[in-house]
Structures are given as structure tokens and as C-alpha cells.
Amino acid sequence: MFIVSTRQMLLNAQKDKYAVPAFNIHNLETIKVVIEAANELKSPVILAATPGTAKFAGRDYLQSIVEVAARNIKVPVAFHLDHHTEFNQIRKSIDLGCKSVMIDASAYAFEENIKLVKEVVDYAHRFDVTVEAELGKLVGQEDDLLVDENNSQLTNPKLAELFVQRTGIDSLAVAIGTVHGLYKSEPKLDYDRLKEIRKLVDIPLVLHGASGVPKESIKKSVELGICKVNIATELKIPFSNAIKRYFKENPDANDPRKYLTPAKEAMKKVVVNKILMCQSNNRA
Ligand code: 13P
Image 1 (cartoon, helix red, strand yellow):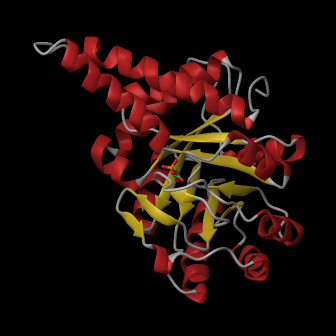
Image 2 (image 1 turned 90 degrees about the vertical axis):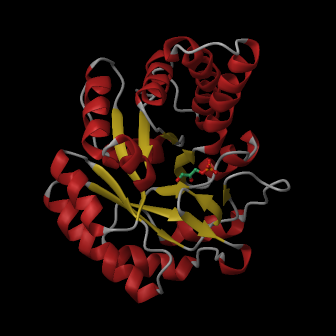
């Protein structure tokens, strides 16, 4: 197939009550792991790249690798910019053919957030590119984006309604108690808030910070309206641990094709579990 935007993908998920997993990828290996798992489980899938990843791997390289990957499989694949904060970077990717972007202006006050998001929506929609934006702030760290506990903010449902109306975004990332990165204790999600948001907002809702969130909590969130689930940290850990283990057992190893193979296998197991958790298998 070819790369699709997240519009129809998320609307389908919303209608049939499952979520499309969005996996943060970093390079050729992690892209191939996600693509292979999604293809085997017949799941639509989103490959997400932060500004840090675009800088590390190259915006054009990423776009091209994902295009080739999508061409070789039978499930719909979207390539999505995650947590981008600058219009110029988003424009660069749209010009390269990217069809789905997140503008994260959640660090700004409400009116400024709307202004920047609207600017991106106006540009993106001219090219049929879908736009996700965030209202509220998650605790934790995602690349260079760091929010401490004093600055976190759960999404206000009434403001969310206004935000969606005024920006024209295609999906909304909500803050309902998840965090970016690892949890210090069992995450407590604010389902009443999610219900209230769902009542007032009819576009697809996105859950960030899904690493470490129990399966049952994801299931309940999906029942209440979440249709995209973002996962990063839980993929990086097994990938890195497998490399560390490989070198411990083979201190003289030097072939990336050898030491990256167990890393890919370890990451793939998590990707498979997350697809099953989102119930997106057999939906492609
Ligand atoms: P985690 O690293 O907590 O899984 O968060 C991922 C995320 O929300 C990416 O946008």
C-alpha cells in the first residue's frame, strides 16, 4: 500500500471502538519492526517521529524509508509528526509528502495555542494533511519536551470544545492523567473527564504516554472515546536491554546486523502486545 493520512484511519477506529497504536520510531530497524508486526497482525499502524528523531535520522530519510516500507505491505500505514512545536519544521515535512502532523503548542496560553494550531491547520489542510493538537499538559519527558508536576494540567472539557471549534483540528490529544515516560506508581486515569470531553468533542481523541498504562485502563479509555494510543518508552527499553545483553555475552561483537537482531526481536514482542491491547488487529 502507500502512506495514508490518519483521518480515515482514526475515524474508522472511532466508529468501531478500537484504537490505532502510534509507535515512536527512530531508525530503519525500529521502522521495520513496527511495520512487520502490523502486517502480520493485519493492523493499521502509525509511525511517529518527534523533532529529535527527525534531527537524528533526517526528515527526508525518514519519509523515504516509511514510503518504501508502506509499499511493501498490505496494511494502511501513516507517518505522523509527533510533538512538533515549530511551524517551519512541519512545513518541511509536508513539503516532503508527510500526511499527518501534530502541532504541540500546549506550552502556550490558550489563545496562543489556538493561534499557532490554526496557522498549521490552514496550511496542512490545503494539502489534505491531518492535524493533531494538544490541550492540557502531560507530566514527564518526551525528547526535549519536559513538563514537571507543578506545570502539568489536565484537559478542561469546555475549553476542549472551544479549542476544536476554533482550530479545525482533526484529532485532539487529551491530558487525563497519563505521563510521558515511566510511572512512579500505578497510573490513575480521569475517566469522568474523558467522558465529559467525549460528550463535547466529536473528533478522534488521542492518549499520549501509554507506556506502562495497564491493558484494562487502555481498554476503558478506548470504550470512552480514545482512538489513537501513543507508545514510545516501552519500545526503547527492550530494544536497548537486548543490545546490552548481547554485548555482555559477546564482548568482542562488532557486527550491527548481529547485535541489532535480538534488539528487533525484543521490540517486536512489545509491538505485538500493544497492537492486541489496542484491538487494532484484523482491522486493516
Ligand atoms: P511514552 O513514552 O510514555 O510511551 O509516551 C509516548 C508518547 O506519548 C509519544 O507522543
